[in-house]
Image 1 (cartoon, rainbow, N blue to C red):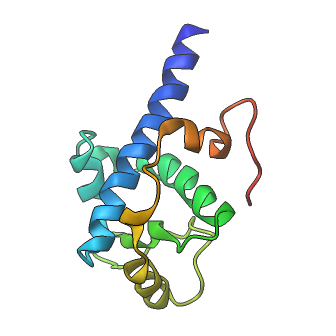
Image 2: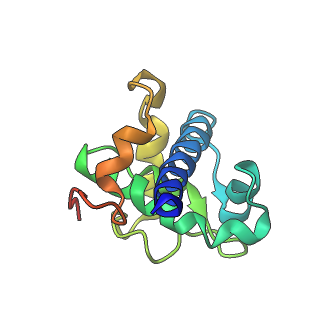
Length: 130
């Protein structure tokens, strides 16, 4: 039971870390690959697959609060487009990214792991935002 609590807390902490990376990238009009984000948060290049779980939490949070799809800033290396699992994107990822770039993310209240708790499908009391 303790290992599950640790895994749950870590998942929310990692999503919060990625949020911070993404709002900085949005402010600088940067697009990042999954590998870059994984390395920035200490998971190494092989962690690129693992961050999709954390991005799903952020995606649901943005959808619920009608925020631009900030996860659109992360693209597949060599393809330059977001992964297919990002259901909140339109058919025009460039337009989605421009909405993300135009939003003033630093004026939002700083996000905490507890803010993301309801959007983690692995938690017992998850808010269904999809």
